[in-house]
Length: 150
Image: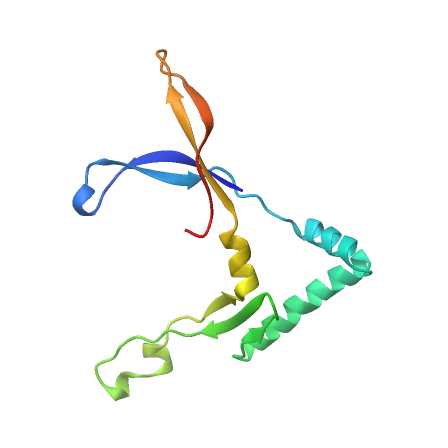
């Protein structure tokens, strides 16, 4: 579940310039640490923690080497990484050179269907704060709860 709170700011651009606008902002982002990941894989397989840790380090090294060579890397049901080098539009063919036209390389990750489906199932909630007569806020219950995959 991802919980959001409502925040405000004064808009500095567009039609709402100078107006107070409201938006949903994640309260916290839960993380699965590397240790948690290793422990989970150990529980679900016959591998030792050392084996899993070594496999993750090796995977990182192999992916970095492949990206360094300009290759994309398919990670099975997880998805794939690929290097992308955007290009600027130039006025003449002669201006199209590595230094002039090519921007910094980026890494693009494209998830496979299983990962997209997993994130589409995340539950989303917005916590609303109700002000009382003293001006202090009390948190109301979960509001507007719905599954992800907007």
